[in-house]
Length: 255
Image (tube, rainbow, N blue to C red):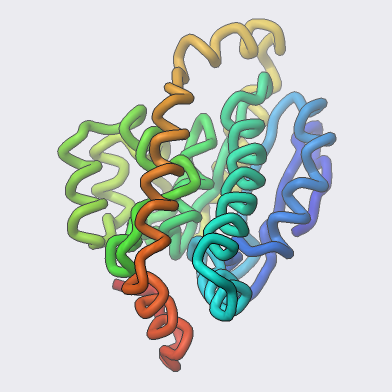
């Protein structure tokens, strides 16, 4: 991940192939950017990879690192990872500075949970959004359900979660998941323009407004983690992960 300040905006550029899967490497980079995030006036998150914004958690790493461990040790390792990613996402979500996500292509699973931390999601018409976790016998574990419920109606949450199907960008814009819909290839340019607009306003006013217009129930985040870990203990989840890891298709995360 690259971190740079561009025209007063802190930009977090995701560039971990094949599609910015969130594993230890990307998480280390995100944690390394926390100091800069805390002092920023505006933050922009985007991907430099053609495949999309983020395909979600690095399931191959999740499986390979825990396959030979006893169940409770495997669960404890996953709990530590979830605690780390929740700290990073909480900082972005509650940052006094506004956060803009520029989304193209794939925005699935943990990638969608990442984007939901932003205050404004700018997506091009080729973007697709999904929570495919139920195919593995899991639910989202990075805070996705409480954050999605904050932004859209519960019918949309149920549709995304229980079917595993993806929403195209137009439908995501219609239901309120996407704040700005732009032409293909234009998300980053539009997101940079939105971030520059935000710099025109008093930082203290922005910081005061965000907790009021962007509430989040912390207990729901804890409940989501608890359910995720309870499901993760089941043998069928490990089998589902094994099948995913052995999938030789180029894009196994597609529904």
